[in-house]
Length: 308
Image 1 (cartoon, rainbow, N blue to C red):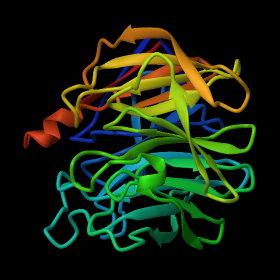
Image 2: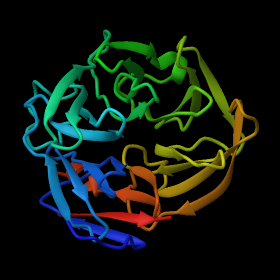
Image 3: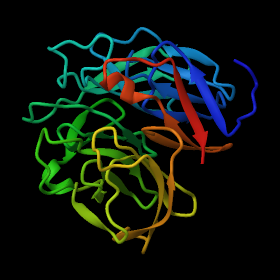
C-alpha cells in the first residue's frame, strides 16, 4: 500500500464492497472497513487503495457491519448479520445468522465466532461493537433491539433489552439500537435509529436511563464518535426511515453523567446515507458506502470517506 497523504475526500474502488463500518488501525496507519455485500474486511490507505485482510469468511458470515480494532490484544472484531442484501444470503440465514467474528489483526486469520442470536425474538442482526479497555465487547442489535456483552473469551449475555432502551418500539417496525460507544466515565451511550433516542446504560447492571435531547431526537442516527472535548459527533441518514436526514450532528452534554444533551452543530452531508464516523490522526472521517444501492437490488463499486 502507498504512503499517501489523507485528503478531505478519499474514494475507494472495489467490486461491490459496500462498507458500513470503519475503524482506524494505528499500526498500519490506515482505515479498516467492513463489507455488507461480501462479509469481508479490507485495509484502505489515504489514496483509497484497498488491500484485502479478511477474504474467506466463515459461511455463517453474510454481511459484516460494525468493525473494531483491539490493538492491545492484536484482534479485529466484526459484527455480522444478514439483512438479505449480502451476496451469500439465503432464506435460512436472513435475520437469523447474527454475531461477532474475532480475527488476528495482523493476518486476518479467524480466531472464533460468537453467536448472538440470543433471546426469544424471531429476528437478530448484531451490528456495531463498542470495546472496553479490558477487551469486553458491547454489541448492538437493531433487529432484536438489544445490547449484548461479550467477554474476551467469547462468553456472551444480554445486557439490556428493547423496552428499556427505547420504550414503545415494536419488533419489525424499523431499526432499533445501532450506535454504541463506551464512555470514558464507564457507561455505554446507545442511539436508537428509528426513534432518535439516546440512552445511557450501566455496564454492570444493564440499567438504562434515557438521555433528554433538548434539541429533539436524531431520527436516523446510525453511528457516532466520542470527541476529546466530551462532545459526541453523530451521523444520520434516511436509509431505513424517511424522516431521517443525511447529516452530521454534534451533541454536548449538560453534565458529566449525560442526563441530558443539546445539539450544538448540525451539518447536512454531501454524500447520501452516511453510516459511520471515525476520529483519526488526520481528522474525523464520515463513511458513505452506497448502501441504498443494495436495498434496491443493485451494486456500486465505490465508497467515500469524507472529512468533517
